[in-house]
Amino acid sequence: MTFFTFLSKFPTEEAIIDYFIQIRYGGVLICPHCKSTVNIYRYRQRLKVFHCKSCNNDFSPFKGTIFEKSTTDLRKWFYAIHLFLNARKGFPALQLQREIGTTYKTAWRMYHQVRIAMQNGEFKPFEGVVEMDEAYFGGKPRKRPPKLYDPSTYDESKKLTTGRGTTQTAVSGLKERKSGRVYTQIMPPNELGERVAGPQLMEVIDKTCAPGTTIMTDEFSAYGILDKPVKPKVDLSLLDGSEPAETAPRYRHHTVCHKRYEWVAGVTEDGELIHTNGIESHWAILKRSRIGIYHSISPKYKPRYLKEYEFRQNTRTMPPLDVFDLLLKQSVLKPT
Ligand SMILES: [Zn+2]
Image (cartoon, rainbow, N blue to C red; front, side):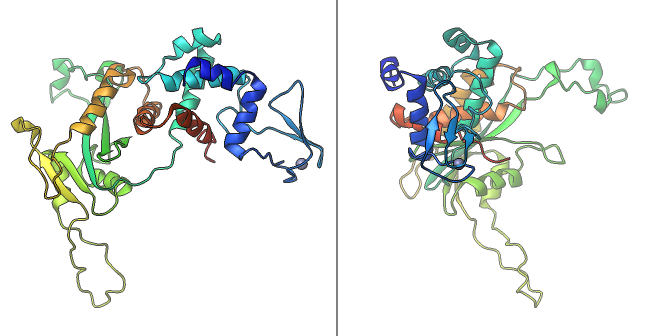
């Protein structure tokens, strides 16, 4: 959407509120107190609040959305969203602060609310061919001073865990080849400290891919789990104590061997090239962005940055106005 489209579409705060009601409620306001849809009036001064004459109560259509607790003018909010969506590679809060004349804190908070809306979308499982890979973010971990490596004095509890000593964040990613849609998630360590072991990767695959999906990975050994037969959980109906039969793997698996400098490992029986270049190009985008460069994104916010780039990727072929509307629809916070 160009700046001029934006201007003509949203000339006043009132126009913005009407647009929001159209997108969020299909144009019909319902009083949350008495469920009435008639006799609802707007205040001249307090635009965000409506009055229901049927029950004499006030309500806000922005309750339960990312805009709820904000006193910032909605024109600033919508312009901020417009800027954020238009900038393919992300838009810094510092620049937003200058553009709309708020404090840095307000600008920063607005964009985090927008990121929350971005991650609110519904996920449709991947099928067909899916590329999967993992990457590490957050700057390179520095080497510890050699004295700390002395096994006689090394104290695990004194290990540097912040700043220089941080280890990078492991992220697992999948990309559906046909649609170009991406799914990424941070891999927290299990009780053994492993982050990308086979069962953990399998959990992500089961969550995101329909059975029968063809999964392409590199030679990383943890993906070997994809080739193993699956033992179903013990079925209580098998009372004779017999072992449940093993079934074939749920997914088809092809690997490309990057260690051998192989980038395309041939063609599948369905004529699909075997490679993981698609998901790797998503890593390249992330590595050039804030998340790949700075240590300073706290682990708490990292998933939001991941979801921001996921949203950008997954909506990249949609008309800009549809993306804007989608974000507004997703601005409703999930009940916590
Ligand atoms: Zn009412």
